[in-house]
Length: 354
Image (cartoon, rainbow, N blue to C red; front, side, top):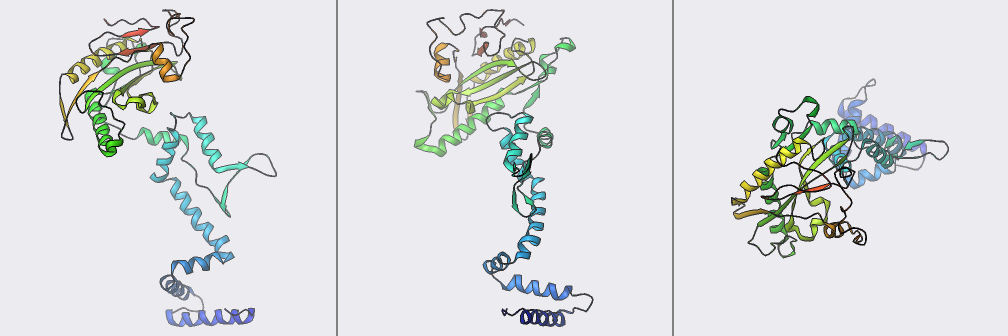
């Protein structure tokens, strides 16, 4: 376009009139001319040149692009593509509470005002804010609609039968054999993919003889005051056993680990473990066997996992001063279940006969 303003305006008008004649525009409706020019421009111009046109147009940058981008961001915030990162943040480093998730969501997209109190949205262009993670309430509602696994069963009908209504618990568990087979398949795939660099250790046994450990622990938690989790770990991962990411949840309930429901579940679990160890499985054309090993919760184990200093100068065991009256205190009680044995407890009275 010429530098002279009058010449530029004249050429624009002549171009519009010519396009109007070609595409059938009228004095009251210039849409056909605009549509024709746009179709010609978008099809005949390279993306790089088109981007150059838009980037040099103040009108496009301030009044056109923000409208398009804002609409796309609003649509993105409601899509599955936004659910995935939102869930990842929710479960990063453990399940976040509502306040923590809200704080992270706010801090990622808000900043302090320079001239007033409070926060304002971070703008990526005029009138367009950064996309936000899905709100906590919507995220939890979505998670509740997911059928994670048909292998998950309600704990109350099977393990709370005959108990008073006040003793019923909310909890769920996974069928051990089905969960074990999925766990085995996952580790075989990882081992085969990593090859010589694999961290999977056969521990002097036959190939893919899995050595597993199951543990249970509970602590005060949430509105129900107590919660208990049962975890399974694969010892073949060697030093990775020290990572909490190698502990897989197989059961959980809003009760203490000494609750009758938990003791009944422990008996079923031991029976399932006996059944599993008596078989061999064909997984991905490999002959798979399993054994459950004792993982002692003694002072050496705690020192290895948590890096604690030895307290042998005071007690021969970290639990040396724990009894039936103090064993339920947070963080002191710990139980380990292993094949063919009774429950081994520190700091809690268990009744295997229930």
